[in-house]
Length: 640
Image (tube, rainbow, N blue to C red; front, side, top):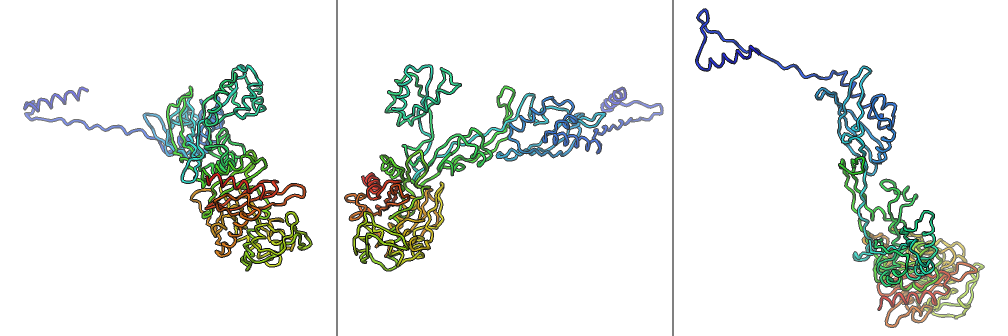
């Protein structure tokens, strides 16, 4: 310090022009000493390797849940390592964690290791981050002092990590031209507060009368062991449009509590219920099928399009890795993953046509189905099945087509050279290959034009002519022109129609009149009628913009003759009940035998304008008497 002070004085005097004489009369100068900084301490190669190895071993042991190894490398780690590990893996839905230690250095006197983490979060993808951990060299080797930073560098004491999902709003199901069919709509949730009930019988009867909720369902819910007197116990709900007319009656019942809510609904009920489907809490089967990111408690599509197009309608969730403190509050978002918005599904359903179909079946007590198809495109415009708590008969119901299959047989005969005016025999009974074929009522009509035999649905005529003039191959070729064996599929489960090659004469006769091994769905029958209307068979579709690519042109001359014969069915044949004054309705009746003891299934297929349709009523009996009037009601609702 003294030397530095002296040098400073000398420099000041020199600057003022003064000097000190030496004893020899000369002037001397003193140079300042040179100083150098000591080199910064660094880790030796061995120290760096040891610190890195200890860090990597600790992180790998933590990822693997090897707690003895963790404690060996971090002796001050907490007692409940298992609990911390479960919270870490469970909170993040963690699949695997991979660590790569990249270096070690001295930072302010401490050894710090750097590493890269790559955490597989399943459906949320991979979370990559860089971090550091302090490392200490001890007499027994390198150790990593425990802190929450071992789990993640942002964590403080008692913090946890949680992977939060955010599902997008479920998309709507749309109809033709983008009209919204299924979306969230206002409903009233109806609940019972057991302690407020004054007259139990009046409450049960009122719920049944005004809300359609069976008393057994109410008793089951309020009778559960854990139910308390002051609880709100939901027993059902009603769309707001149905609730408003009976609001005053329900509000007057002591013990009821009515709450505003929303539910995913069509505009009116029933409305293509089996096709559109339902939503609800995910089942174990669906959880297994859908996998990550779905979890117990999620609401998903359970049936119909809601189920088959679940991923489209639901989209994909976004994710956040959250740092949550001991009070459950989110204090930091550490990582985000963008989701995929839900996409509306555009169906080919026309609202007015679907409502007409539902209305036509409203009084039908037997199992039934009605399908309507646009004749030019094959797009399904309406699809309805009964009973509502049954399966989708329109798509999955396989039935013998009965005499409606004479459309296919007649096409084959006309293609082979027959004309509508060609006289053909229509005896009461014929025997083909040892099997008897009879007409309805065992009527013998003698020789009549083919078009009359078609209009009156002569079984003996078509069974005989198919056997003698078409044969098995000719019959199957005609069926192929109407889409049998084409293998089309829809966006929901659909049964495949079948027209097996008949090898025996009796089987040929049976197939010609829609019996034997021939099986068909109402959807396919509607497509057959649509082919006659347009001159080309189109595979049915239910999603707008989804072209199946399957189409088969019919011979135009044969098609014209066949259409005329279908018109005669309605004007002068078995289908007069489908006739509507001023409207050109074409059709074919069918009464399909399927049991030796049960009544036949009643069929009517046809077209009107640019709409083709098929109606089936299980065990309904005669198609002309049972199914044809349903078709007429359907058309009348649209003709207005």
